[in-house]
Image (cartoon, rainbow, N blue to C red; front, side):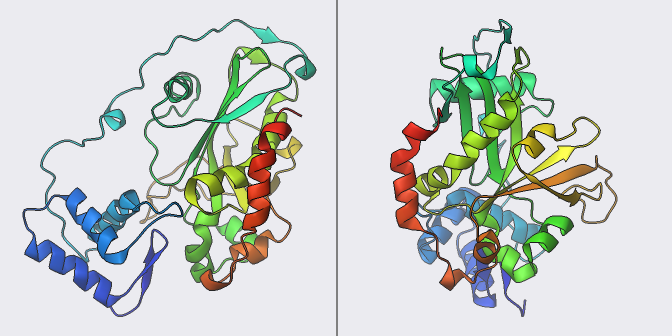
Length: 316
């Protein structure tokens, strides 16, 4: 390895690969988790809240192994992540038809779904049962939202996660060449799941919910990960949906995918063609998303103010 590479937002040089190889050679009895933890300590690799980026380190190691640069120890058993290997449990929830005007549901409450809560169990159940893609585990930075009406009834939920690694139309629109994309990909998030529950039939609800989430997500992301996001993206399966709610919420259609998946490195896997949408969260989103790492202006005081004002805005 002669040139630096960027994996999981971290620039790696030959000496970094050498460190990993040394750890693997000197500690043959270590499990993969122990190796990723040690890497975080050696590099002092932390997120914006000061926690070690253990999951990012694990993913980095797997990518290096796939690239043929290291060889990880064999797994000693099935994944310890039991949720990944089973369907979410059923959570009781009402399914009575809701058909009314949007004003009759307001104010809507948009809440971040926290780990280990009853809301998370409900969120997982709803996506798994009613979203056509289902829902299992989520790796990397993400936010889950659960939306309830004025009576406390769930009406919608959404998941935002890691942005697509490459997308030609999006990258051209943002002015992203490889280096800028690798530096700033974490400042963009992908709306990977959006679900209005099937028994809820309310005109303009979906676009209204998208607007509520867009107005708060920068502050929520800052609070959780120590940095904001500057734009949202999503990919709409054109064989199933027209993207009406995204257009109504002022998302920009940038183009379409080429019918490939993120894992299709040899151009052999055919996938559904999807329309590419993007929603800028700040006026200077291109400058922020193309900035060198040392010259970002994240607007932290403004974000702190947004967080304080959030409760008063979301139901309007």
